[in-house]
Image (tube, rainbow, N blue to C red):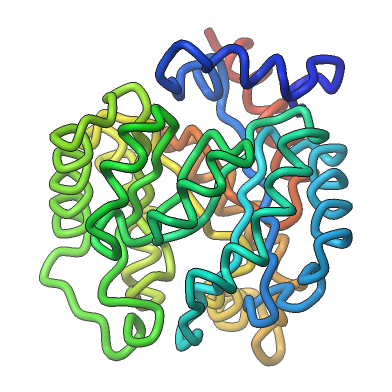
Length: 303
């Protein structure tokens, strides 16, 4: 499922050396699977397991072997209530991992950060995508940094920040309001010089949303896809709302730990793909990659 390992990363870099990143070259013919590489001590699912650079790189390569089409490296947890990380520490965590994966993985590498300085350093190290949960609102220099580099950009919706986002989140119409913010931030990105073809949007499942908000956004994901007019990334992987739903409707006793939410993750991934998502961000890519392949065959048979 992943990009063929016979095409080394320098082929990827050369493709974009004289041109702006285009999502159509990544997810134009079919949806893709983004594997998560958390280089953090406190991420909700695997915090601390891959804080060491060697462990993080090995994990990233294993994700590619399991079917990930691109890798998303992050050095600051964005789970609810997570503590902020300063730029020096975030760079220390992610840059060696980004550089080594860009040189060895054979797939595009994304940097998951809200800081322009971290993004710039990661791009220099080989990242070709910036995944920004703050959609440019966390650092005034972010959009200009991405525009100057000509890399891909994911703008995500988040209510507040990771420290406060789950403090009684409220919307009058969550689908409309999330769509309003995404459209505004995509317009801001284009105004800053980021090419339309380099943009993707993420509704931010779990980022300042209740269980009901998350389910409503997924239920109406096709409306958001049609409205934003760029590829949509969906990240439901192992999130707490899945555990809550499994507990309430599937007879699961207690709330499943993150690793036991993979079946719920797969169901939400298939739903998102069917609704038009082009990128799904997951901790365990094998089942998601197989779902992408099977859905492609079924769509071809139905054509």
